[in-house]
Picture 1: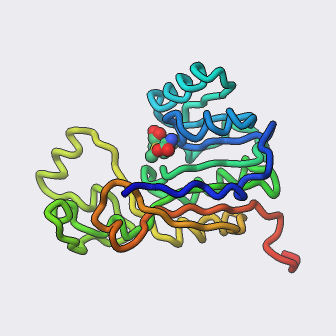
Picture 2: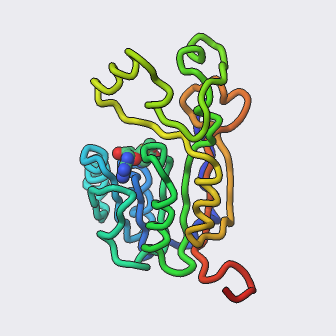
Length: 224
Ligand SMILES: C[S@@+](CC[C@H](N)C(=O)[O-])C[C@H]1O[C@@H](n2cnc3c(N)ncnc32)[C@H](O)[C@@H]1O
């Protein structure tokens, strides 16, 4: 099993030629080169130089124009306000403690009526004990929200900190969905898929989610 669904074609306009797209926390040579090949004016931002080098490598190989910016998804002050038509934000906010400021930052750099396409995990992915899951048992252990640091204790935590491994954060659906709405977005599309990591839970429920949201000037027909 793996993530298999494509982002629906109608989440993008018929042509993206010339549109300004920010691929946020999206290094690795996947999303940004494809969008650049379709004619968009693409900037990819990621905290990892190594991930961005993958985008540069694909861009060189395919003779594509791509801008790369190394930075933190929680601070988009590098970019001009209301300068992007589309932000593509693949599953990556599991690496930050609080996704809400990121939704706000994205709203700041998108034009009015600009589109945000975001992927994130369903929190159910994180509630089970890892060791028990490897043995084939789904043992509910962890509350949401929480992080790797809460899930590990004693020696395991010490080892984890010594290895300087990446901390993963499990967010509530409220922070993921209402967080976008609170930042001024109206959600206009949603789908679920297998997360794709051969997780036992994939047999029972899909734990990858994607939303399409539009930055609104007001949230309905009623004046503010
Ligand atoms: C799972 S990848 C998603 C993008 C990738 N192209 C893909 O399709 O799998 C998560 C990305 O988030 C990046 N990342 C983690 N923390 C970040 C942060 N605070 N700011 C920006 N990028 C971050 C990682 O370097 C990684 O490239």
